[in-house]
Image (tube, rainbow, N blue to C red):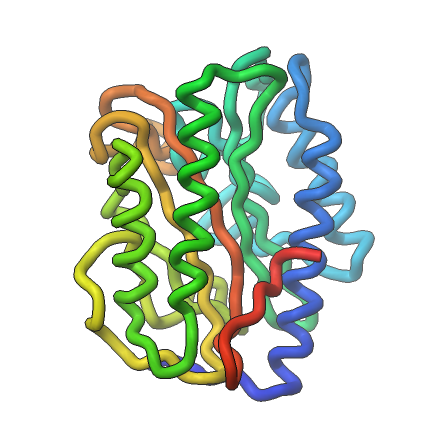
Length: 248
C-alpha cells in the first residue's frame, strides 16, 4: 500500500532530508586518503544526533553502522570499520536520518583524491541517471517512467544497472511501498500522485550487472569486482512536479 503524506508529514520529512543533506556535506569535507570508514561513521552519527535526529540505519535489521560505507567494488551496505581510504578510491556513502518519526535517505559516491577517468565517468553518469529519473517524478506519470529514464541514460554510456536492489517509498518506515526499480519499460506501475515520497537510487556498475553478498551478510560487491556507483535522493511528488528533500 502506497501511503500519501499530509502537508504536516511532508514538513517533517523535509527537515529529515535536510539533516541527511547536511550530514553529507560534513562527510564530504572529511573524505580523503588515510581516513577510515569508521571515522566517517563516527562523524555522521555525532552530527545527526546533534541535529535532534537519530541514524536510521543503526540497528536496522542488525546493521552495526550509522552509515553504509562502500568502497570501489562494494555497491551497498558496506559496514564501517578499519578500512583506510586510498588515493584513487571511490566511496559510496548512504545516510539515513530519522527526525520526529520520519526518515530521510540519500546516497552519494565520492572520489578519494584523484580518480581514474573511467571512474570519473561512472560517477558522472550515475548522478546524471538519478536526475533523469527524478525528472520523470511528476503527478500523472507512471512509476516505471522513472525506472526507464535511469536505465536508458546509464546503458547509453556503456554501464549496467543492478537489478537486485531498488529504490523505495519512505516515510515513518525506512522502506515502504512502492519499489522503484532502476530498469524497465515506461508507462507501467502506479500513477504518481502528490503526497508520494520516494527514495530514487540508481546503482550502476562499470562491468557486468551481477552482484553478490559477502560473508558478513551485508556488504554487496560486484561479481566481476569492477567499480560501481550509487546515488540517491528522497523526493516528494507535488501538485506541479517534485521536490528534492535531501539537498540544501
